[in-house]
Image (cartoon, rainbow, N blue to C red):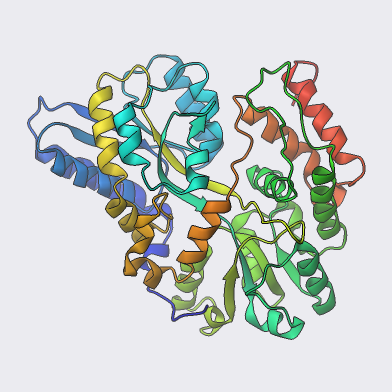
Length: 436
């Protein structure tokens, strides 16, 4: 599984995003005439890849339109707030939006998103991976177009696995990881903070156990039923509680998100970690900078997300970005035309290699340069076929916040009571009987 590490140039932080985006605006503005329709693309922060694609599609449009990028806040919750306010106010500049999948139903339900034309849907999703496609729909309708997808892998230290005698070519379970961490006095790289990462972890555990956090996510606030007080919910709570109460997530687990979990994994106590693919270029960049041992990448392997139930496939976390068009956009037809250009497999491949964000297109993984930069790309692709979205509901923000308040820190989780109490709390919040 291990291969020589790639260049770490695409692993640098998002600090260059503003510079690249500004450059793209200047370059885009120098070409077409002033009367060319301008499409505003609200992008999440990255390493400048979306601004580059905007420039490329502007050039390919031949004067039909010009794309300008506007960068959204860093965290998903702030992105959601800004987009929702603008869309609710009828902002006509909402031409193209990079949308986090969990927030799509909240925007689709009140009609804030323009319908995806059938021909656009056909062209842009003909080879989309199942997990990414699931995150782009609402009530069985495609309401956004998948751009890039993301998923978590199980990362492991080869030295730990060798000592434990585990065969990582075979599926492994959370119980096995816990046992190895106990036996070798190691720590697990997991995310225990009161943050979105907690909902990501819990959802993956519940889905992997065959359950759902919400049984009927499309229902109204008064009719929503939760699925936490179930066998799947209790199994998920048991894993969280065991790791928290036994200190297997390290002393900083209660404030630990993805970056902190990566640091635990990179250290001497590292063993296993569930995390997004960004950890590979980030680790190699740190090695190149001399911050980590040169031989560390040789001790890192990867596999599919761990199972909760021994004989059931896992349901890894699903992330990524989909593209939507505002219902009040002045140029919806041009916006969809631009989106067709943005999400071509070639652009998705380039975006993965340069910015580290995996494609939603299956064929985009076929370029040899992809596996050269990300040797775990085949595992990422397989994981995206199995990935399950977080609850697709217009009330996702309330559901996620309630989960964070009751399941963090993991050490305070009581497997017999926390699932039921959290499910009841979610329903009370949605019905206006409790406050977050």
